Length: 489
View 1 (cartoon, rainbow, N blue to C red):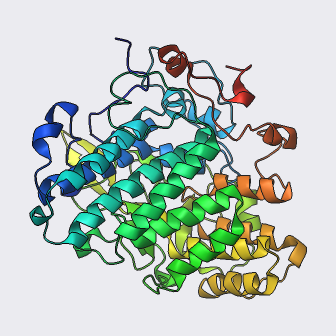
View 2 (view 1 turned 90 degrees about the vertical axis):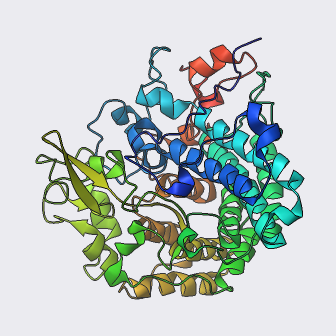
């Protein structure tokens, strides 16, 4: 039998996490135990929890930084990235050679999709086996439906995230197709998106708005999380009619409320009134000993770093985005702004552990995937794309108002770009900027990555899609390289 086509790393253990919450401690269900495991609601819950844990492992790969390295590091938010391989990620030098044996290498980890497929395999397993559990083994029909809906959401989330990174990717919806070493070619991105749409519509029909356990708010999927993912999927496609209608499903429900911008940092501790979907790692028994806090903070916000920040912010971008001194987000979420090394302190909820005479900093912040302001601005973006300018301005100005800013004064011709800029202010260092700039480029042709990173010609040729690591192609001979990178790697 061949080696696994899609190399699967099924061991759970978030690389940079010091410990994790009970529902994220569950191990993935192995094939050998499927026939004996799925007996009741508790088993189903453990199976779904393992899926969330594998998502967290994926977003924390590459020294706990993958979520931000994909979504923020290659953008205008940073001036440089003074760390091995992350400097190449920052400059979009994604074809740099890495020895195939160095699986620890940050660039190799960024170019591989192994852990995504671990999470997908777990979701496939839940989708297959939860319906086989007798209804009377659940507290209610709603409980069974919610667990199944979460599994469909998780599969859609992983596939959407991957197709934004690589474009065409192998598509697997059956258990065993991954683990039985079947050679799988890359499916067209449109086919992957179609599967995501199908899964999300199923999830929406199964999920409820409320959580059975209030402690699961935002860190497990509900109907709002599924609608949020669906809205982003439509925006990525450029289907702004459906994106606008989907954002209304969330907004009209009135289930989420803005956090007061004077208390802006509370969002990043997690489970705020604004949070729609997050990756849990902020509780006392959770936390990251590396990750984004380690790379963007310094003393006095990170006392273990008495030098400069490893990833210095782009001062020109800060001055452009936050030109008004009245912006509460800038006042609250940034520090040392008059220095040559200003900081974003969204992820500064840190405790210190003293062990064997070594002080270790542990950051307690959730990874915020979707929140209300994000969805509001996605609606404004949709309305601008549909030339409904007055309505778009009204939503944009709502977000600006709670941040302490006046109405936006640009022209209709510049409104779409202005909303992307507002997303840059509101969602700075939250994993959105790269994808926002891709949508800006697709819609308007405006490039804000920096010509030294990606020219318009590069963009049109698809440079914003990542290459596959050659190690994957050595395992699976049916894979082909991402077109832009085919002659470079």
